[in-house]
Length: 418
Image: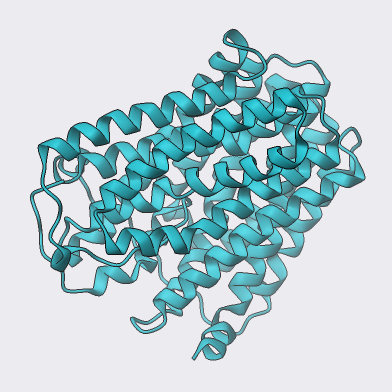
């Protein structure tokens, strides 16, 4: 069945992999390039924020355009636009112009992910949805990690921008030549955020803090490594290791959360995030590069699990019919956190304990979530085992990804607890 599933989804997965190679490269390239140009940390954070703001706008407001022109045309148009924006960044290295260009990049990226996820959703059934989602996450994480090693060609020339643009263009080919019909797009389900907080305060805050943290991981962690005066190759390797750690920890942590109180696992991951951030500070200060690799792997593993654990915590409280709307709502909460996160993190980096302000920021996030979870744990009993659902790792991309969640087809009950 896996081969049959792969046969029907290979075009979309290949487009995803090629596109994300470029996205992963660009996400690390930009802060390194700006750091070399002596751009202020606060402005680098603003550029990162602009990207996530565009991603929110594109994810939740672009569906009329896609419905009007069709998925393949939309993908082709926005991949071309994304490639042009990348070239403009290389040709016009003005950080204030980059704020606008990164906002446009965010919108383009949202459309590209919506098309790919819609395609995968149209090829999924109840029996294959879990497999398709797993293949999606493998392609996503693998490409993000592999894209880091393009940095070995250098960060100070126009070449890496050209490579990102070429990858964006190449990503059009698999979808453009497929014989499969275009999927239909459905608007995100309506959801009231106040209701989500009432149903699962832990899942709500966990998603928000995950957005605050992961946007800083993607947008600012390479800058932190650059401030340590590490080589470009070492920065690329460390960034790839963080993403690889995030991929490796999903299944074992998810399985653990299926067998015990999910809030305890979420609590453990928030504490572990604090401990791994402290470890990176210690090993970086001591110049222990081998231990720095290990601590970076652990940080990625722990912080990347916060969002899917928060989603699963919410889904334990929802009826099957409400799961798509609920996960789309938490995606919005995550996205708001991702937009705010880089700005808040740069305040820490600029004003506090330089160059370790970013790690202190992760510690503050972990401690805040830890304190909240301890309070909720004392206020609410453990969820009965018969009401808990299986852990599912969802990407933090667009509302379409929520519809790939196989839990939305299960017979679950509404639980008014946390």
